[in-house]
Amino acid sequence: MEKIASWSIWFAVFILYSFSQYSNAKIIPRFPSTILRPESLSFSSENELYETKYFTQTLDHFNYQPQSYKTFQQRYLINSKHWGGAQKKSPIFVYTGNEGNIEWFTQNTGFMFETAPHFKALLVFIEHRYYGKSIPYGGLKKAAYSNSTTLGYLSSTQALADYASLIIDLKKNLTAEDSPVIVLGGSYGGMLAAWFRLKYPHVAMGALASSAPILNFENIVSSYSFNNIITQDFKSASENCYKVIKGSWSQLEKTAKQKGGLELLRKSFRICKNYINVDSLEGWLQTAYVYTSMTDYPTPSNFLNPLPAYPMCKAIDDPTAGNDTFAKLYGAANIYYNYSGTAKCFDLADNSDPHDLGGWQWQACTEMILPTNGNNEESIFPVSQENYTDRARYCNYAYGVEPRPNWITTEYGGHDIKRVLRRFGSNIIFFNGLRDPWSGGGVLKNISKSLIAIVAKDGAHHVDLRFSDKDDPEWLKDVRKKEIKIITKWLTEYYQDLSHLSM
Image 1: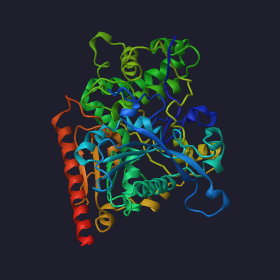
Image 2: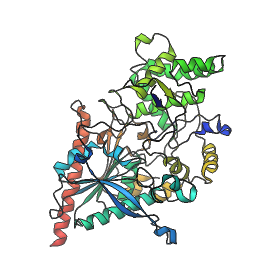
Image 3: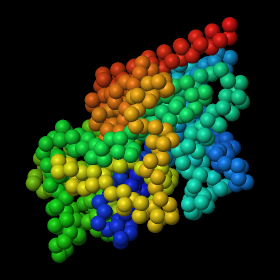
Image 4: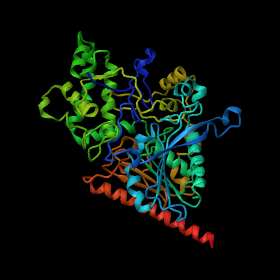
């Protein structure tokens, strides 16, 4: 019997359910969970899409202790099919890798592949340290993840320095020192792209930061914004759908307390026989709602899971379910977890990590403190407040570390961003779709003539970076055209400057 893993690594917050002292916490997932499957592509083999290479990377860029000079093999993927070459100073587009296997992100970033012929660009996708096959300590994940000392080299600052070192070395080896670099990324990768442009302007002359919540720190935006957007997404799709989900939590709790209630829930939701409790079931459902909202794409997709276009309320509003709330909820979850129809039951206890995403738990315990757990009376989720104390207690329990909620804004900024960056930053595109719950922490207004916000009312999570589809709506086509036009302008200015300086 085939089983489907429901959740195992919960990003930005954690699986507090696993610890009895936190049993009352209601936690929902954020960045992608471990149940994801890569986009299915039409390429006959990976060699048509990219070539895999490795770079000998420094473990610690910022200290000069003996262990700092240790190295590891960092994976990057490269596609030179359309590159115009170093002699023509053709551009290099670099994807700043996210919290996971770089192949998965590469296979879901069609924008780069589809624009490469136009720009005659070399494509490079760099894997983030501690993810995929880019593991320090001899490539042994067990060793690299063994304790807070070995994990201590996993941070955004070290990752950005990795990218800078690799890009500089690659350009030197290709004799392409004059080829301009544009960095691109989505979600956490988009945050890294924006920060890279600000921190390493001598390495990258522009950045496309898609769905990058760089303002989702230290109360710059409300901790309620994430779930408020999810709530509005469901409301706008269907008022009935919103009401069914909002009213279901008390019914789940009430059923679980009844004699035989857990068994009824297990059967209603096709949960595997090995394990069930109501907190896990609620987390499983919340995961589906959050990620369905994030990936409410206008065409069928396979980024997080195989999904139809606009999947949010199809099952809940299906009249064949009648008035059976659990049947409606099961139908919604089944679309998210089992649209392909292969699963016979859902395993709430599965702890696998097939896409190597587990390092985010450490990052969310140290610097990536993104408050997103607030729920007001109107929320589709039960009323709650952001609870930093629970997070800090868990992080101390798991790693013996205290989170640093102010570090990201200290290192990269964020407060009063318009005043700060208009005199400092340049050449960054911030794309946000307003149906994406992360858009609440994004840059939604232009900061200057070259710090540009592109906002799509109906857009979802980094939808602009996806492969194009014949059924893409006009607004999405227009977004990509704007991005291409802006990048073209940057490159034109770069070549003009290069020409004037060489005279």
